[in-house]
Length: 225
Image (cartoon, rainbow, N blue to C red; front, side, top):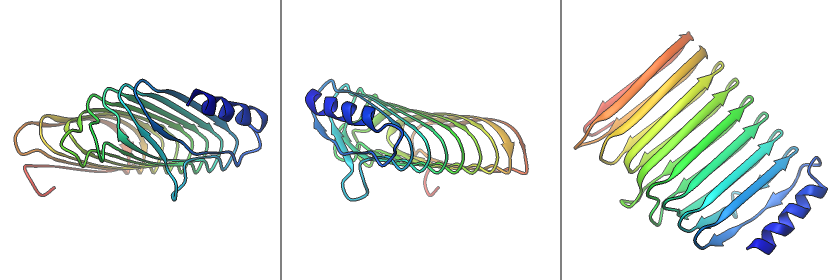
C-alpha cells in the first residue's frame, strides 16, 4: 500500500496544477494513514463506476482538494475507531461518501470543511446496527452549497458552522440513543431541514441563527419523520 501511495504522490507532484488527476484505491487493513492533496480542476478520487473503497480499523484519512469541479466518491465498508477529514476550497466540487454499510463503523469522526460556492456533499453513515457513535462536523463558508447527511446509528452527533447565502442543508438521523445537532448559522436565504427519529432516547437541536429570509424546518419524532 505504501508503494502505491508513493506512486500517487509522485504523479501528483508532476501534474498538480494541470487537473484531471485520477486516484483509485481499494484498501483493506488496520491502522491506515492516507493523505491525498489535489490542486487543480476536475480531479477525482474514485468514480461513480469504481469508487475508492476503504475497510479497516483505526484509519486516518485526510483528503484536500483545491480547485473547481473536483470529486471524491468512496465506500468506507468498515472503519471503526477511524477519522476522516475532507477539505475543499473552490467551486462546484462534490463528494459522495457511504460509511459503515457492511461493517462496524463505531467511534468514527468525520470533519468536512468547504470554502467556495455550489459545492455538494452527500454523507451517509449507518444502515447497519453496528454503526455507533458518529461524530460529524461541517464547516461551510460560501454560497449555494448543498449538504445531504443521513445517519442511521446509535448516537449521531453533528456540529455545523454555516456562513453564507442560499446554502441548503438536509439531515436525517434515525436509530436510537441520544442524537444531537448544534448549528451556528449566519447568512441570507439558507434552507435548513432537520429530521430526527428516536424511539427510546432524546433528540436535541441547538440552533443559533443570524439570518435573513431563511427557512428552517425541524421535525423530532418517535417515528415517521
